[in-house]
Image: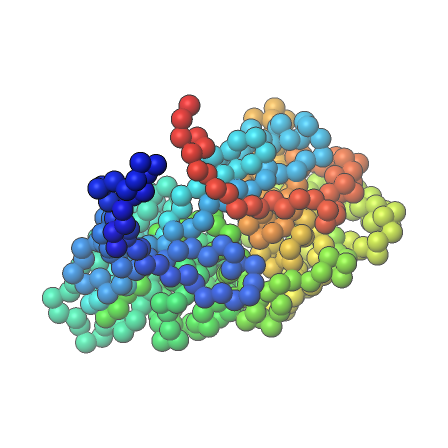
Length: 435
């Protein structure tokens, strides 16, 4: 389509070529993630960047998808006082841009490839490396999936590569493998098999069943695999509201729970995650809360004074018989959770919107080192929860002594649904385009 350009003096002879770039959106589900759906481009058209997946010239590429994700920003963590904020701010690992009270996440793309008659031959490697699948800042190669001259008779019909590092553990399955499966969900079927590390325990197996209804028979340990159709989605953003929210929504619905969550007034539990008494902690020699028994009664007294019917419960994985039970507890009962940095906080994925997460960061006496990371701040914000950070002095094994009185003050101030959202859409425009 061509249109004349109108000026004050009348139409010019120069023309503006109006090109239509065809894109699709993932299907709306009537849930929170609908607002964050990416634009999916699956056809290469004039004017499109040649690095986009549909434009790559692979002879056996059945389908290439370029997913353009909307920009967003998340509010910096909340803190009990300026000293805690200043100390912990120095440990933030900026994945994109941090300015003022916001972290900005911009220009994120994903890519899905479907190759015909090819093989996986240990590339990418299924472990942490400089070019592993979904490793930060190092996209995995996809040029190695050349067409086979002849497919062996034992070739698999339909396979997805899903062996991101440590995909046998629930935390890294959740923060990497699950996101790939979410991005590529529309390309998968009930017959798809998955190249992935074998689950460490029944919890990881349950994750597979809830997100794609995959059984143990559909999982293939990383080795040479020949496939008539291979789905490759290692170019999936590590952090985006659409991926985190839709993963959570899909799994909650599969567990028979409401993906929209439970209202604030119906959730009364402040969950205490001490690691000391949690049967699910694998590296139980570190990040103990040394004075847990001193802080616990003070938190119970706080909840009594607040007069909102809130109650303190202690986290212990042995209390739950299944992943579905854990999901139900976090989704329907937890109003807030407080704990030392550790994978138990990853259960914020099952929490209802406006849940408040208080993370205790172990920090050395000189305040130069920490065992904490951005991850739970980012995951909480992407899920629609509020996030508070709090530091405590640690020993060499990151075991902490917490200032109980100050923690009580932080929780009394922060355990509310009145704080502004931590997650917002963002339009960059020309911001930061010039000094």
